[in-house]
Length: 471
Ligand code: FAD
Ligand code: EGU
Image 1 (spheres, rainbow, N blue to C red):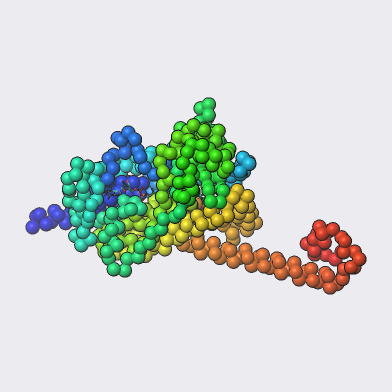
Image 2: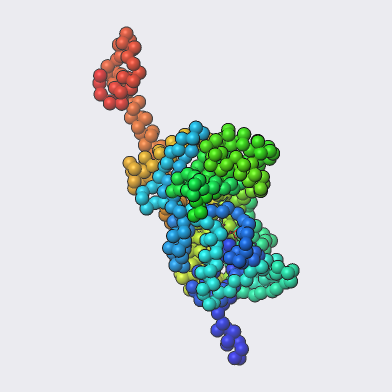
C-alpha cells in the first residue's frame, strides 16, 4: 500500500536523449516544470573535454532561438556572448563589398559559438536540483511499449533505464527514431545534397578582425559559395560549400590556391596561403542531410525534437532556431493539456509537423536557388527588390527571410503568406504592364506617329509613354 502510494507520488521521469543544443535546452524546460529530468549523452562532458570535435563552429541565432532561450532565462547570457550581424556583406568576384541590412536597427542576427552555447545550456540545466546529466551514455535500443532504454557506457558496459517520457534530441542520425521506422504509418524521408561543407579559419590581423565583424559575409558564386561568421576571438569561421566531386578534384595545395584565386581571391591574403594549403586537407568535405518525418511521437511515451525530428540543410540558418522553437511549442501544449502526455504528444505532432516540414522545404528550396543562379549581382538585386517592396508597402509585403528570421509567424504560415505576396506582386506588375500597353495604344491612336519623325531617340519615346501624356 505504502509503496504504491509513494511510487505514484514520485515525480515523473523525463529522459532527454542527446545533450546537444536542443537536448540541453529541453532539459531546462522540463526541469522548470518539476519533472525528474535525466539527460543521456554519448560524448563525455564537453565542459571538461579538451578538444571538442564536432559540427559547425558558430551559428546564426535569430528570433525563434532567442525566444526559447528567454523562456528559460538564458537569453541575455547567450546574447551578451554573441556578435550582432546587422547586415550581409556581399563579396563580388572583383573584391567589391556591398552591405545589405537585415532590416531596421533592432533587426540583427547573432553569431554564437556552438560549443559555448552547448556548455552554458548544460550548466544551466544542472542548476536545477531535479536534473541529472549522464555523460558517456550512448542509447543502444529502447522499447516503445515499456519505455525501457538500453545505454552503453564508455567502458562498454550496459545500463537499463525506465522513463515515463522519452524525448529524442539525439540529432540527425537519431537512435531513438529507429523504433519509429518500424511502425506502421510512419513517414520518413532523408536526402543528402550533392554539396559538402568545409570550415576554414580566418585569423585576426594585428589583433583585429580581418574583415568587418558586424556582418554575415557572403561570397555567392552559384555552384560554389562561401559564408563567414565572426567569433569572439576576432577570427572568422569561413564555411565553403561546394559539390563533393569538386572537393575531390582539388588534391594539392597549389590547386587549392588556384581554386581560391579563381573564385574567392580576396580571401587568400586574409586566410593566408600556407593556412589555406594546410587547412583544406585537415578534414574532407562534410555531408549535409535533410530529414523529414511524421508523426513525431509514439503513444504517450516518446517524442522527437530538433534535428532528430527534422534535419534541415543550413541554407536558411534555421536548424537550431527551429529546434529551439520546438521546445517552446511543446511547452505551450504541455500547459494547454495539463501535462497529460497522451494528449500532449499527438497535439505536438499535429501542430509542429507542418511547420518543421515548411522550414525543411524552404531551406532546400534556397539551396537549389542559390546553386542554380545566385551570383553576387543577383543576390544584391533580389534582396534590394525585397527590401524596396517592403519599404513601399510595409504592411503588405514582408520579405520571406524577415518572417522566418525575425518573427515567430509559423513557418507554414510564412510560406503561405509568401505565395500570397507573390500573387500580389505579380498582379501589380501585370496591372502596371497592362496600364502601360493600354496607355501607349491610346496615345498612339490619338496621335499617330509621323513616320518621318520616327528617328526620335528611344529614351524620349519612353519618357513620353511613361509620363502618359500626349507629346
Ligand atoms: P545535435 O546538435 O546534433 O545534438 C545531438 C546530440 O545527441 C549530440 O550531442 C550527440 O552526441 C547526441 N547523441 C547522438 N546519438 C546519441 C545516442 N545514441 N545516445 C545518446 N546521445 C546521442 N542552425 C542555426 O539555427 N543557425 C545556423 O547558422 C546554423 N548553421 C549550420 C551550419 C552547418 C554547416 C550545419 C551542418 C548546421 C547548421 N545549423 C544551423 C543547424 C544546427 O547545427 C542543428 O540544427 C542543431 O545542432 C541541432 O541540434 P540538436 O540538439 O537537435 O542536434
Ligand atoms: C549557412 C551556413 C544568406 C550559417 C541564406 C542569407 C547560413 C548560416 C540566407 C552557416 C545566405 C543564405 C539567412 C539568415 C543565414 C541571408 C537567411 C545561412 C546563416 C535567406 C555557419 N541565412 N545563414 N537567408 O539572408 O534568411 O543573409 O554556417 F547566404 S542567416 Cl544561404 Cl537571416
